Image (tube, rainbow, N blue to C red; front, side, top):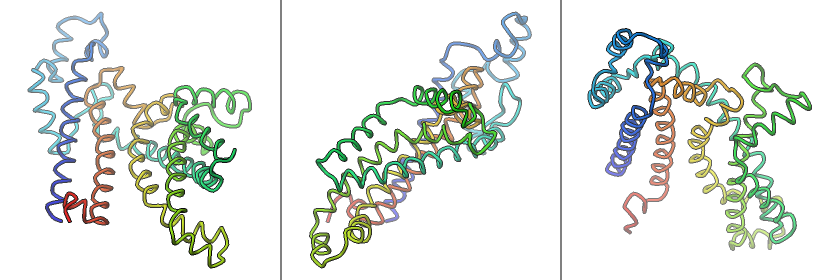
Length: 309
């Protein structure tokens, strides 16, 4: 068991280091100079060189990467080139908004997907099943950058029920959560349907029905209790994807989270902040996947021993 935990943790660490190095190199290869963004193209060459030297941008990419990794080991992500604040401080300010949006989207997806998946499984082959799966396909197909503006146009501009953007009130969370959660709801509804259909064909479900138990009792006490495992696994894995996918949604609704901070920093060529945002998203995603992987190993010993008996 110890070897299994060590291997999983080392794999997660390797992925994080690879992501950090890859993002660092890609950001520095993007055309544009943060010095020109900060001083303007009309600034004197001497001023640009002085600022570039002060920020360490005149060093080689290898030296800058080594300096960044050294600071990372000390939990120092550097300072923003634009805001002149620590990257950690900027992330701490934005993380609560992103987590709020991700969990709200997860709740929205669950509320939509649970009745759709159960209805499609119980009414298999009927128009109800066809309608639920058609909605699921539609939800997967619609991108967030189109759905978000359409919701703003209808509910904010035409009806005036919700704010257009920002995080000023509780109603500001409704449209971003629906936009981000709809795609996941489509995937989750299909998983609930397939998992429940597999369980409904088991012998213990038929035995429960033969004993005269009511259909709601059979569904919730016997079928759903055994159908939750793959559903919960999917929810855990997709939570990291929700944090990563929140970038587009946050930009559409001007939600003050990690996604908006990342896009603004990319436009300003603010390298330390972009690296900090990507590091947070990748850490969250890898952490959730690693915890899920370890939990599977605890539940099923065959995973720990690579399928050996």
